Every structure is written in structure tokens, then in C-alpha cells.
Image 1: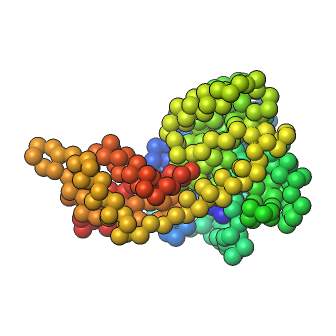
Image 2: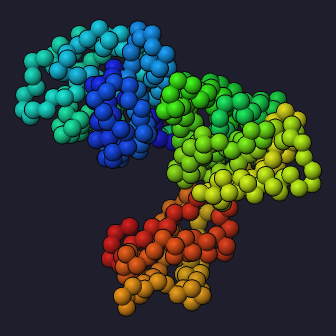
Length: 441
């Protein structure tokens, strides 16, 4: 139900972030020579031939460090190892095999996960240096010499990684099930919600812990349909040592979002919206998942007949980047509106999978362009020849036009709003792709 996950681990300053940037093809991670530098972002989509996976960058592991921040980073690296389907263990040929490398190798072998040993900073081409063979002593297997700066050896490394990854084997039963990721900050009631659902429903098919990801999957069949709830109860609390450390706490949520069709983003009604809520919701939005904002602990809020409307307007402003997401006020403790939550999950999942015919889209396009004329620049006007849908989950539409430069963001937003107004598409992101005529999709 989602892309496999590959974690990059190793001691500080061996080039993990540089390798991460090279593999995802963008400069997403901050690269400094100082060990323990805070990452700007620690996940990215990676593709090699027909394989797609989520790559996770981690802070350097200091196996025996006493410093509070380093211990925290070690714990988060262990979390990444637990979450991953495969691991890239990065070492440095210039410093050779160190005691830290040996300790990390022992930690990785205990994990039981497939590990690819990366020997970084082999910048020369041709025969690998003799020092490479020292790394066999780690007992991990064949070392792969790479240069994360120049990209040498990354092709062979990616081949080895893809050979370790599980095949996507979505059976019919799994296809008809709706995977629901319950995500959010700590102590907002994620586990309470899942426990309430499991305690109330009587036709539970299975309730078993995932072996490759640190979350619990619970299959539930009820009158609303078939669901798999992915509880991310272990989401780490905000770090108190460094502001940047808090970023590592989204690892479990990333894994859950990747595997889900619908994301229930839980907010604590007694605390309101926070920056971390925005980050977790933003990832679900980026991945094109159907989303619901569930405001929990509504029973604990003092309210009058206007409180819900006031809170709804505030949350719509806070989540302005995903204004399509419906907002529901629930109580996991009392079960208030949990039945309505099931109905919403079914609804937004169907919207996320909706397909619109090309004929209907072009009828809409003709009306929209007649109502608001396409923009022009220096006497040249945008012409949109036709529009068609090329994908679902999320619904993705391509517009063929005479000039991409003339297709302003504001006009693309106008077309998106017209699509939503005509066809609904509530609870799901919508993607608009702009192509010039003759350009491949």
C-alpha cells in the first residue's frame, strides 16, 4: 500500500546527506562538515528504473555518546532503522574502518534488515583502492564504493538496494480495503481513537503488529466497509534540546502516510493548531492522499452555539494550503461523531479515486475560458487546446496549451476551482499539469 522505505545511516561526517541529495536528485538536506548538523528535510522520493522508494536521511550515530543531543539523534536513527525496509550503511574510505563503524554494523545486524554497505568518498575512477577490502571486516557483506559528490558508483548501489526491496503485491482484498493513517502530534488521541474503533466493532479480521514498520495495523470490517487503521501511537514528542531535533519525530507518520489511502490528521481541541500539525499535514498533501482534519477532545472544550463555527473558520485559515480537507469535531473518549468519521473516510477515498471523462472536462474548459478569459502578455494570449485526466490518487489533469509561460499560477488555480465546483473532489488534492502541444505527458 505504498512505497518501500530506505534509511541512510552511519556515523557523523561520512557524507550521508551528500549521498541523500545525490540519490533524490535535489539539494534537500543541509550539508556541512560539522558533525550533527540539523537537517533541513530528511525524506525524499527516489526512483531507479521501475522501482520507487522513500529515502530517509538520519543524523550521525554515536553509539556510545553521552551528549543529550547525540543520544537523541542515535535514538531517531534507530527509529529509522526500525521503520525501514532496507538500510544504506555509509562509511568513509579516508578514515577506514573505525570502532564506531563496528558498533553500528553490530546494531544493523541485530535489526535483521537488508543492509547495503556504502564506502563513500572513493572519488577516483577505475580500480577501487586496496583500502576498500578492509570494510569486509564489518561482516555486512560486499562494500559498494561510491562518490556521493560526483555520483560514481551510485548506479550499482541503487541496483543492490532495489534487489533488497519487497515487491508490491497488492491483492484484491487489500485493494478494496481503505488504508487509514491516523497521524498527528503526541497525545492528541490517536491511539484512543483506534482503540475506540476496535473496541466498538465486533468484526475485526486481524490485529497484528507490522514487522517492517513501527506501527500497528488493525483490519476492521463494519457496515461502512473494509478498513485498515494504521496507528502511529509512537510519534515522538517535540525535542527539548534543539528545535531541529523535532523534525525527526515525523518518521513514523511518513511511513504511515506512504502506506495509506486516507489520512486522518488529528488535532487537539484543547491546544489548537501547531507548526508540527502543519508539517504532518503537509506531507500527506504532498503525497496526494485523501485527508480529513479530525479535531479530537471536543468533549473537553467549553462551548456555546458559536464555538464550532469559530474553530472551523480558524482551522480553515491554519490549513489554507489544504482547504479541500473536511473538518470534523470528535471525541475518541466518548465516541462522539466517530460514525460520521467512517462516512467521511469512505467519501474522501472515493473522491481521491474519481475519474472524469475527457468530454466532460473539455465542456467545463470551454465554459471556464468563456467566463474568465485566459491571460495574455505582450499581445500573445494563452490558448488551452484541451484537458484530460491522466491519473487518480490524486486526480491529476493535464492541460495542453500554446505557452506554459502564459499559464499563470492564478489561472491554474481558477481551473482547479472550476473542476472542484463542477465535479466535487472534496477531501483530495488536485494536480494540474501544464504541457505545450506536442510535449509528452
